[in-house]
Image 1 (cartoon, rainbow, N blue to C red):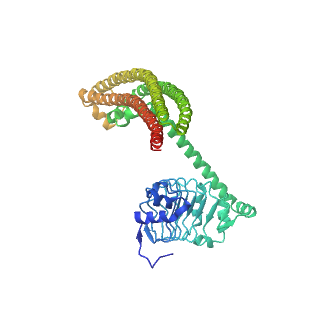
Image 2 (image 1 turned 180 degrees about the horizontal axis):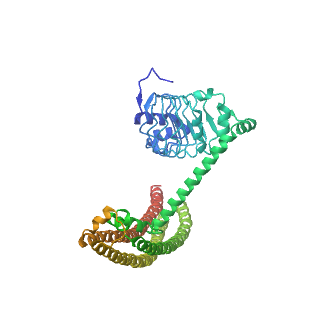
Image 3 (image 1 turned 120 degrees about the vertical axis):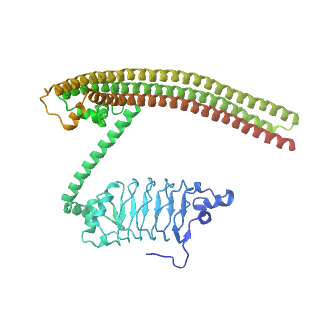
Length: 522
């Protein structure tokens, strides 16, 4: 493995980075930047750090816009410190001492990666590199030809180098890769011809067909899972997730030990089945109502955003029109002032121009105040509407949840009635059915069975109450945060616009001031 034995291992510090950036010179103007204004690492697009005997990658977090990074011919042992380089397109880590592929999870824009001449034995941990086109892994220690199958996930991969690895000595090496990576164009710096691709496809058709079948099944499962996740997020946005089935009902019994015992009593199974069917219907009503109300809230928000955008665009158009009229007159006035020779005339025209600047600033400020008032009215109307929608949603959900409690109360009464009847039969010795020992233990006396039925009932009511409270809390919190954000965004927009108007006025006033000083001095 390549070593720089005549140099001590070095740390990648600010001094090294400043020197490297400065030496790049005109290629990306970083050198000029360093000399004239000091080094701004965030503006550097390309960085060359080869043959520096670097042992550890560090201090690159400021290079947030870096596109190309050259770290070849060093003594780097671990891929690290690249997390912030999310815009990196080209990375060269060849001729180092790297044993494991890692630390690349944030480099989602990387297209060209060279790990040539390292100590890598396994191809993995590249999943995030969805744009990968060129991969150089030659002269490493990759010995398992099946590891190549991992690279099938990179749909844009066109160039691959693996020469110098143990797998390259395999008799079927080239055919295997061509068969399993059919979109590859170059392998080990040689173009793959169509004839080779056809032979490889025929030779490995059975295995690749089976692999494609498995991949299709996996892709279908992933798509199903993604669809379910997206659907769940939609349901969460409507605050009714897991109410489109028996989830709430099942959760009532999940930790209900007493309820599970009581379910085995004669006649309770039929009672529970009826209870569950009615309970689930109410949950479905809540779910469907929640989705409809979410659509109404979304429509209200979309309408609000459209009104705000229209108002801002119309106001901006008026402001641009007034500014354009002013600038046309302003440039003409500046030209006239420069052509005047009489000091009195110059002072008069400058005074007139100052009035025009003040008039423009006042006009732009007036437009902004009009917009503020218009948007304030729009925001207040939206706030009233969205609060009304949320309050109506909560009111109706609470009404439906009350129906769930009514069902639970009715079920509790029926269950208690059955339990008391069974207790009386046990006391009289008239019970024909055999009860499990843990269930019979509940019937030692009336207080025990009443307490058991009551404990089950309390747990069920608690589950219903908690789900209702969760829904109400979340939708109220959503509404509050949404309205607060709208007000804050408008405040930020207003401050930014006022600052723009002031800065523009200062700018044109500065032009006039410099002209006045120049003419008076002349």
